[in-house]
Length: 170
Image (tube, rainbow, N blue to C red; front, side, top):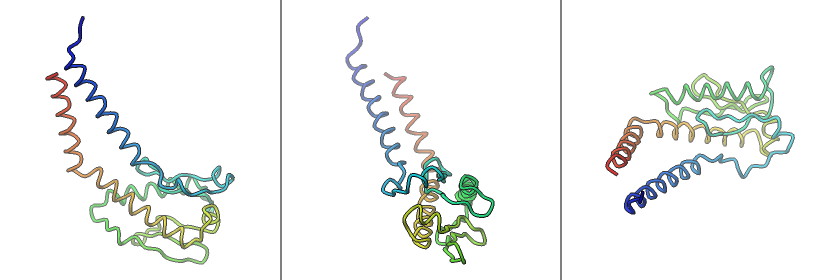
């Protein structure tokens, strides 16, 4: 059975488009903390905060009875709630200094706290790390809301439908 050269070309082109799209999506979701170098001990203790699939930052220290993993899961839950809040305003995420931590808050809710051990693991001060975490939180929520907006979902459905129709025609 001999294949139609046009069919082979179009199939190859579609596979190339799918591959390039998948590669671009993977590259855009890479962890933005690649330039940071915590110590080996800190890497082993750290727990990534990844509410939308991609790590935003890492928690290294216990606070009270909460392990880094418990703190990370708690932060993820809070960020998911914020991302789903239709009245969310990113400028309402604030920083406040406590006696032993810098807190990132939204309204009365403490999203995350940065203590000395977290800061040491990143080679930073508590204040600078809290500012960086605040910026990462805002960016992650905005990216997630943008990617899951109705317009973006409709665009993805339309492209998928067009690809299916094209495949049927071919």
